[in-house]
Image 1 (tube, one colour):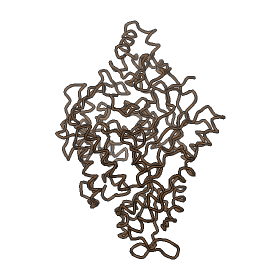
Image 2 (image 1 turned 60 degrees about the horizontal axis):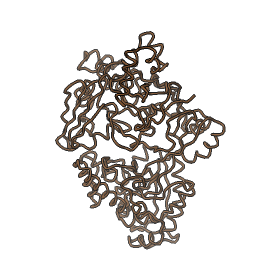
Image 3 (image 1 turned 180 degrees about the horizontal axis):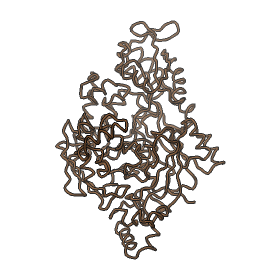
Image 4 (image 1 turned 30 degrees about the vertical axis):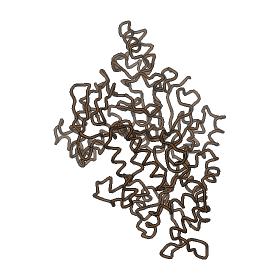
Length: 629
């Protein structure tokens, strides 16, 4: 296939204009005629990435068209980096890591990673993309104390050890550690990727190693920044897309300054992908992003104002959107979500309430709470019976899935739940039938929510009735997300409701850190997670044997390069996590409505809609989507 495309390109090179014009996007015809852009053969790498059937390009398309999308805030335009999904290495639809920006990569036991770049690859402004851009990032950005006072991103550290980074030639980059670093490649492929390169030719003028420091300081102050570092970071945001002048490797380039109500993303003339016919990706010329209130997006999508929309649509919009199909030129597709649980309950094991904390740390109590949930009722009433009633665990499509784990302590069994609650010591009740805690207070649980979804309210109303039969009274307390998180982190929250495991379709080479206390954002043990994140400087050390064991297993996973051992660790952690019921899953596999213009081709009929690892539309490559008319 590579030889075939090379042959097509050589034909256009030697035999010239007629053939070459067939491959050229008409969008650039005027710029090429004026000499502002070179011909296609000089704009793509010598060995471009060929988008064939293995990468989802089932139907070679044609150039042209403008894709309209709706987003709710200016900062949402960063999703164009998620959707564009141009990565050093990335996932394919089967969640296998493959080359993308890199022509090839070699992984030597997760200790040494060798990347070969594509000869002739260029930034969106036409400047060569080489190992100099990786060298600039490593030597002048990642290890610069002003830009990164706490050192490089933690993914680049293994037990505090910095990598050895080499740049043998213009097309080779090597990262090397003495111990395995299994996080490195997945971070490069992430929805918000680890950018280990920056456009040196553009950004060096904002860096004191290449520009007069006094002059740079003056420019920083004139721009409203205190120092050169703040000024540099403002110019260098590859993910946030706030600087339209910043060269990019994404398929579409932002051309609009913030703030705005309408952002125009234009095709990258130097993008490194082509189809099997030699046409340069993306097929679509422009992506137009309109900023509207999130509450209006379902209505506007239903009026046909978006050609491709998933965000801000929920399952309860489905009926309305289906009715809109008759009036507007779109179809509604139901993609799968992959959270281990769409919504899960998190008893706070680090609560500041001593009596509650003791209860929450008792495995029998957590199991009783889970057994007291009528998941069937929630599924039927809130989700039209379209979801799986399940623990917070991996999905049936995962290689780690076991039916018994999905239902472990997750069936509706109020009799067993009552027996467990009695065993815990909650065998006394007040006149209203509410169980009494050891301090004599009624067992009333305040469940904190971020107040962002009516789904949570609906679930908690049904949960209220189920748990009341167990002698437990619940109240919901919504608050803004920042306040919600602070209450959880500080221990003020007894319990919270949030989404479950982010990735319900893991592979062995993906980190199992979600199953262990590794992050403050894990609402069942925020202080233990903070302790891990800060290397013991803040938070609290885990003091439950099973939680300690999960942390140790996660560490073992990070130190091995054996795939079979990684699989064993994953399975062991999943079984322990479900057995201990550290989070209480309710349902998963909630369908996600996706609105698709009827003329838009190559959009999958069925797919996964998730932040990680699929980057929403990212792994399906919107650059291969095309308009038939």
